[in-house]
Image (cartoon, rainbow, N blue to C red; front, side, top):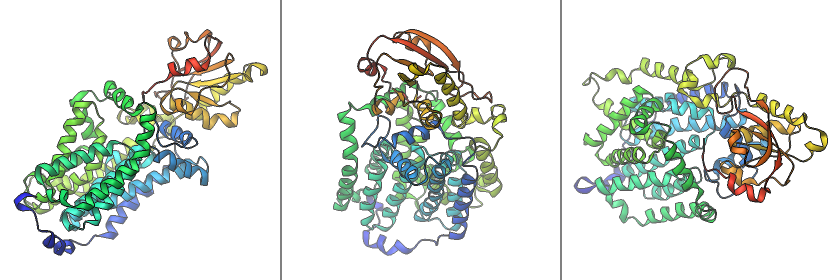
Length: 508
């Protein structure tokens, strides 16, 4: 840490000089979050991403065009034990969110926070809208948030204790994180840059750091080999996301960052950045503020998503809580850390992200606007039944040679899960990972194309007949609502020719 670096011997001696953890309160906060999430876990339905992961779990591989293999592997484990149970899937998401509350509190402890700072940080993590949303639904970001938060905590603990075994542990955790999202590579590069700028540079003299790095690299190698063998589709996905720019440029990035963290909690995070840059007590952890700022600029410049910063949020809240704790009574902003403010934030998070409204009134609430992902959990069985009616309308001989083709992975996952009991044939899609699960085997038969615009399919078949319009029955605008269903005949080319041309890297 330059001239202010604490000698290793002193750091080891001070390793026990931290406040005790208020376990009863911290576990109470974690348990309350988990209980709320499990209580509403079965309302509405699966998210399109979860439906995709369920199918990907039956096609396990070292990689996919949009993610590494861990979340599909988790889905495979859940379904092997419980079947495609929405409650079982959502319990995993809730457990990961609750565990993150504990790690957040421990992060504040390692930064020197006493009881109040630890409880504030645990509370901030628990009521954050992004945490609540990701604790309800099992996304890759649900697992990534927890694993990256844990990785940052281990790094912080090493700074305080200089227990070099933690560097090996950090490597192992980074290896796990690389099986969830390759985002961890960028986060680690930012942390390394922060350390180079502000210290503690002595970490680069520790052989165990390189042993930990080797562990992380070894864990990531199979996934990178898969990406290389398949033409680096993850890079194409990243370019597509950046080009899509759904958050409206740098200004939109910042606005959504505040909304995702919770507006008041964003103030606490800003305190954290300021405290890390200004406070002598937090000086050893200054590299985290630099990493956070570097990542913010990088993602704003490259079209990244605001939640790509989520793995560092707990550290910023922890630093802000410690800063607030040490300046108690000396700031007019003290109300930000008051219990009523956290209670209001928790209430807003629940109303904004969780399925607490009757499904037939959801479209008339602000939630679909504030959290569009919630709308993607509604209507899948009904939409599948509509497609099944179209399929059953065909003559039996024609049905025997009929292919189901879905425009995106959400529709494909829904038709796969809910369509099998209704007698639908195997569902195919060229969208993201589904393209790799295989093309249709029958050339020249009838195809029911679900969710495509007519211009996207007219070049493939000589006759396309509109057969239905998807309707979730509650007037909710989501990606499937109002999409057409086509009966397509007169296939112009074999699937071996069509399949490469159908391939799409987009995640939307």
